[in-house]
Length: 497
Image 1 (cartoon, rainbow, N blue to C red):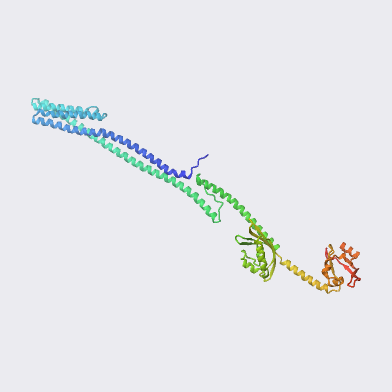
Image 2: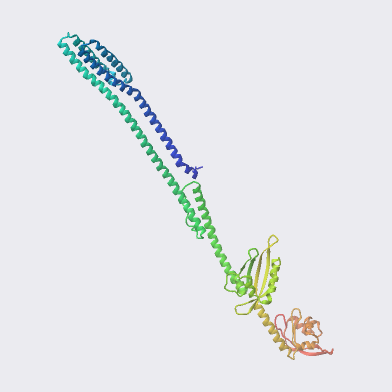
């Protein structure tokens, strides 16, 4: 499984790197200090005592020179003892210098000791000769020349040794200082390198995190504003938790885009279905409504608005406003049935509504409560426009009234008989008088149950055959005797004649 560093691990990289670099610098500094310290100790343990011995030798050499001069000037041979003591001390110091600086070229080949021994020997002999005053002039000149030459060489050797030791010590101090400066520069460079590396890592991590968060924030804001751009995908900057979050968010966006497209298609289909339903309701004169008990909100279809006399509106009116559109005689009936629905009973009621033209229409409202957990949560209802039906019924009643006026004033005996049930559908006033009974009684019997029926009539009615020529039909009278009348049986419809 591929390792994916987490955000926490990435945040640990700069301080861990700083610690590693600091630890490395501390180790390097410690090593430099130890090396410098050892070198310094070595120089201090060798050159400082050597310088002291070299200084002492210069002082002792001056003492020997002075002793030779003083002894000759005072003509005191006993004073030469001091020269012997100083010479011994110089010899001891040269031996000590050789032990301190075993590899020194001046000390390793005893060159200093040799020139000093020559000077001391010649000087001692010359001093004794001059004190005793018995030596040849030539010997004195020879000894003087040899002593002078040896003295010059001895002074040069002692002085150069002293200067070399001082120079070595100064070089050691300079090396120490140089190493300290190098360590300081190395520390500064290491610190700068650490800062640069940490800044690079931190800035790189911060930029990748910033880009991911900005992409997420932009997409979320677009979704929150209702204008998501599903064509854009956030670039995955890393494989950590934030990168995984971006990857999952892109997958979520892709799925959301699919759902959004499906929702748009479903919405378009729903809008088409709603338009078709509204058109169907308009053609059929049928509307629907829904009342939510908990929120006290109501939803009407477009046809309900029209039937309530509020065509063109999109928001249902308040109950008081709607009640004002209901016929005053129907308002109490509406209250009673609404209470029934809220108590869990369905109802069906006819209501009249005031239309913009100033007339009332006729509607049939059916309602059914929706019950959940033994509680009415909604009331669903439908509204049917009965205006045309009621107008047709009114026209029919007017037609029947006009027909009755005409037939009742006619001297003919007129009756309609159902061809299937043989029941009277209509009789006029003259038929009622001739029958001797009220028309309500006549309408409740079948025509063949009366003595007026004859075989030809029965045959005509049963076969739905029209009789265009008059036939003689018996007619009972109020006096009880049976009369006769000329009768015709035209077929008016497929079920009445």
